Image (cartoon, rainbow, N blue to C red; front, side, top):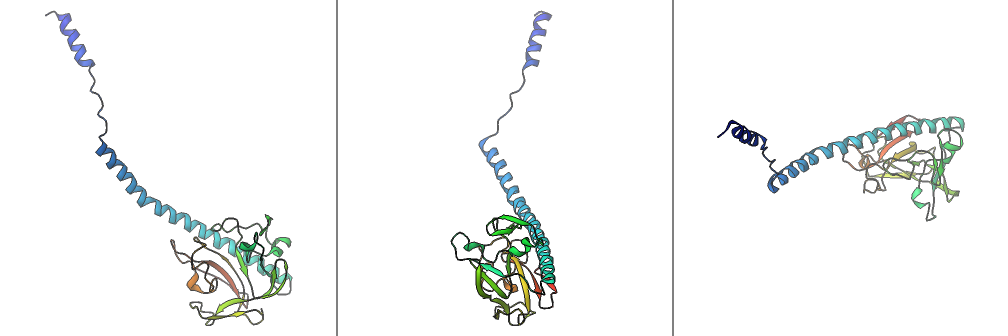
Length: 227
């Protein structure tokens, strides 16, 4: 055999590249299972972190609303704005919206939507402002509708109770006003409880929890917040 023939055969052997082996179905299923397991471990952590960030935002904005209410009261002889409720179908869900007076007076930014005249949206309840309540004057469908009755636990300043009474007179109530977010799960039983927002049993307290996020002022105007 000639040297040329041997060289040709050697080059032919060297040119053969092994074909890549494809994944088997079993291997593919194992990879998918591992990815799904990692996602199951990571996603809840990311969700809790996102929830905590929103809670911090809520507390910061409720603090700002509290300052606005204090400034409004200072300018209006100690009075706070009236509470608003509505029986009209398109506005019924905007019960206890933030006071229009705070926007009209420049204490908070004005909004451009019905039910959101104050440009502050509850991040846990898109399309709606935070809630506001205070014993005293109430407007129903924009007209005078008596006094709003604020429920406060009987053992106030302790709030860990579902036993309490309602106050309609600002001079008698131990609470001046309360603002709150319906929390991460606004349709939950705690968020919609008749004892919310003043019973701490209805408060949101940790990631994954239900309940409302609250800020309120005592009769002496000292402010407090939920955890």
